[in-house]
Image (cartoon, rainbow, N blue to C red; front, side):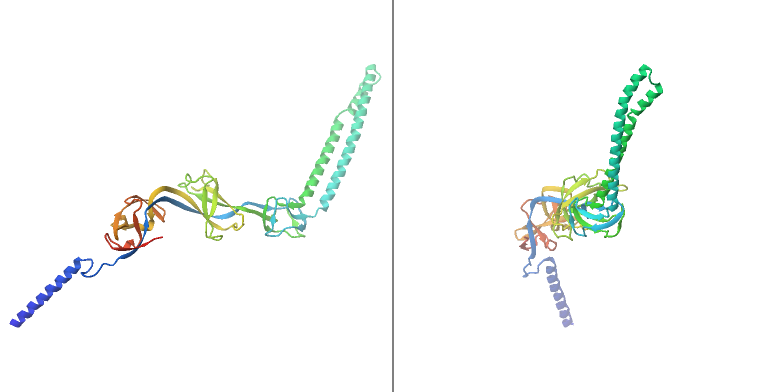
Amino acid sequence: MKKQIKKQALIFVLIFLISSILGGCKGDKTPPGVEEQAVSVETTEVKRQDVVLNTILSGKLKPIEEAEVSSKLSGKVTKVHVKIGDSVQKGDVLFELDSQDIQNAVKQAEAAYRVAEANLKITQERVENAKVNLERMRALYEEGAVSKQQLEQFELQASETNLEAARAQVEQAGVAISDAESRLRDVVVTAPITGVVTSVDVNVGELATPGVKTVGIANLSKVVIETNVSEYLINKVHKGDKVEVLIKSAKETPFEGNITALSPVPSKNSMTYPIKVEMENPDFILKPGMFAEVKIVSDKKENVIAVPSEAVIMKAGNPTVAIVSSDKAKLVEVDVGMDNGEIVEITKGLKEGDIVIVKGQEYVEDGSKIKIKTKK
């Protein structure tokens, strides 16, 4: 019996000792005799900077100027002077039509003009002679030597009406020459703009038809993006504003664009406002049809306290940053303002020169020992 009592007492002592040890360990963050491990973090200094909020608009590139060339006349094509990819200047010959029939028409018009001029000269001489005779007849009429009817016949011969009709014939013949010469010029089809030939849909021997596209030309010295902005942005962008344009198919770095047109009214059946962005294209690396992203500055805060967005974490439902105090972390609740996803404005809780943790802040508590690896 005594042995059993001693055994039970020993068991109770062991249980008490184990409970005491476990209870002591539970209350300490670090077991006695074990050094706290420092959390490796990256930091950056709090500075004043601009926080810019951007909106991305998308669109496709278009030439600054395009032309679809067609013949003004129906005619057989005798020469084609260009091919796709050729550079042309305004006025350069693209293709030519058979001109024989029109040359003959010019000659006929010139001959008709000469006939009309000769007829005018004869008519002028007749009228001048008739005027001289009319004066004589008037004198004879006053003397009673000729009748009223005879006098009227001479007045009719001296009338300017016949002369006006002859002049009209000359003018009409001149118009016919001009028309024929114009059609003769139209057999040579020229470039209406300076640019690059984008299509040639005509061949020697084919019949050119008025209004049917034969040659396409695009001016690629500049390209344009036509896109739209929302009513929220319409009063935040202005004609002449510089914008960044990213065209990944051309290069990774952005191009500089310029807003050249901004509509004051929305598109039909839409609440978005058309805008036009132009870009210089001296090396012709920008091609029509390429997809472009236009970065519009929609809001901006200048010279404000800001930190990287990743530095702000949520603790107990509040935005918090971890700052460095000696070799330990200190958690500070902050008020945030504008956040563009990269940097965020801090309106309360930090000051210039504070060192905030930007990597590893999720793993620290208030007072945690840290090992700093400065963010460059």
